[in-house]
Length: 309
Image (cartoon, rainbow, N blue to C red; front, top):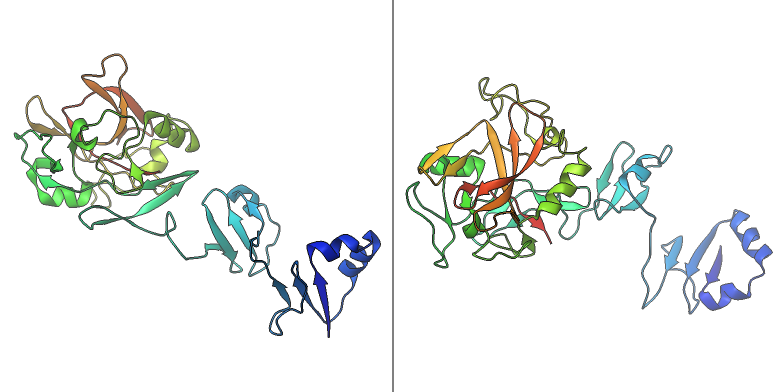
């Protein structure tokens, strides 16, 4: 058995023809790669040693990965889109677990509640609406009192458990007006901006169709889902799992549009009248559109989806 020592200093002394010869030489040999030299560990065919550098495996996007012809079982890559390492098991590409991974790991709010996450393009989103805080009823207004105050549709806790809570814009923002602020989101997460919602829409094909891959499937009438039919275009292909949460109208202290419309706030004010309006994403049972509305009253209550910093 032969051992080769390839380090920065030694490799520079090899004539080019020797390097090609070594690459073509089929033998029963171990390979040690280091700056200092030394034999590979007896249990390893290849050993890389360094105290100040890492081992860099091929990095590629999901589309580049999928273009690999007949990948071998055990093949490994780093996925640039999903920000994790993957290994091919002979049938599927699977993330290598270890540490926090968007789409595999959950995020915890200040009350200890856990939420699923999803990687969509370069963005990491919560895959559920936020449900944190102390419930107030439909006629009570939240205030800047250091307590997160939420509404549940028709004042029912069960609706918060399914659809998430509803928050006024000020309450959600923790009474800040800074776009992209953390607000009531977990640590290292924030309220999405209008531009971040636009990035989401564009990744899913544009506003006219992005609602389809965001909405959960099934029909409320047939007890197969929560959206009223026709639930146009719904596939939930993105894993966003949007639900028809409805909203609370402050003007008459009434809840509207459960099973029909799904919403989530952005942290972006409407520039034409920022004291009154802020931007909201709205999804509809009768359309595949992801609508980014501008004239939503800040005093009305909508759900919240957080996005990772």
